[in-house]
Image (cartoon, rainbow, N blue to C red; front, side, top):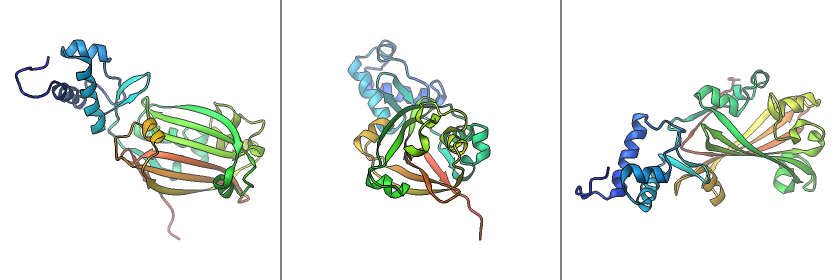
Length: 253
């Protein structure tokens, strides 16, 4: 219960107690906090007090709120993204490619929401894919989660000539993902190029990733090339800068 005689505002007492429980593991990373109603009953305070306490933890980056789902403890661990092994054929054959490889490395439970639609490439995608701006592309728009929390936004674009009649145009692409389906369709992958940058998020990105004010994001644009050198896919990724470590390996030549 809140100590009314301490001189410390009630919402700060509630925030401190919740923070202590999170540190102690009472609420594990990725777990949902009790509902607002339950917290009101537990601490004997008003709903606005609980909301203020949760907002303190959100500002600190301790928790994130997802609309319609609740408030979740933010994973403290960095997601280690080892670019070389995560994109290998062996990883795809083991269904541990890309984001699934990150999950295996850090021990979190991965999930995603996927939307598939079609549009004209536009100037930017056309430049990366070496097609005309009016070329129809297949768009795979994904929200990636670790232990239920959004940690990555990814939008892939592929020329529709490569995806028509394949599972790439379905929400579930099957074992090995879109790259495995490309190779099955006769487009073996020869190499990848990643362009990495950093910037402030758009309001939509900040909301989706539950970023506190002033938090930057890492941007990665990956282009997959076939063995013949032709581009097959452009993938735009947005990552919370405070949650990711990007590691790149290459041989000395």
